Each structure stands twice: as structure tokens, then as C-alpha cells.
Image 1: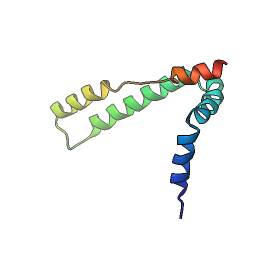
Image 2 (image 1 turned 45 degrees about the horizontal axis):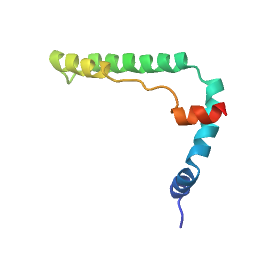
Image 3 (image 1 turned 180 degrees about the horizontal axis):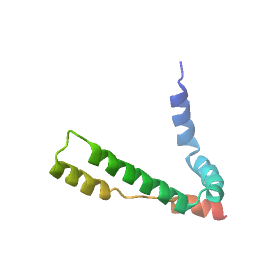
Image 4 (image 1 turned 45 degrees about the vertical axis):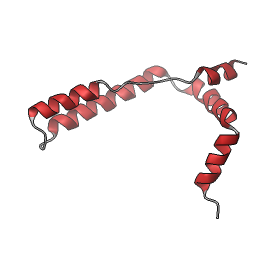
Length: 88
């Protein structure tokens, strides 16, 4: 029996760049980086609120957890390979 997961993996291996091209081509026109950055910022703020409301952490642990959450980076965009393919 073949699972849908193994079918997806096989398709992804065989058509990696074709799938990426289709995705990038569709998403470039409909997604604004500013919207994504706002979403990431909202997630970070929600995490900080959760940490501050936590009853099982002491003040120092909360402070360190928030410092760690501030180090979460955002990587928004597409690889040069995909954007080069879309340009052509």
C-alpha cells in the first residue's frame, strides 16, 4: 500500500523545481512581505504574553525566556533559484 505521504515525497523529489516554480509564481503576486512581518511580530508578542502570564516560571526564568524569544529570526522570501526561474 502506498501512502499519500510517500507519493508526495516522490513527487517532490522528481519535480522539486517545478513545484517550487509554481508556488513562487502564485505567491509572489498575492503575499506582501509587510503582512508576513506583521504576522511574525504578532506571534512574538503573543509568545511574550504567554510567558508573562505563566505561573510556573519565576521572574528570572521569564526574563530569559523573553530574551530567547527575541532572538527568533524571520526568514521571509524565496531562494534565488526560484526567483530566477520565475523571471524567465
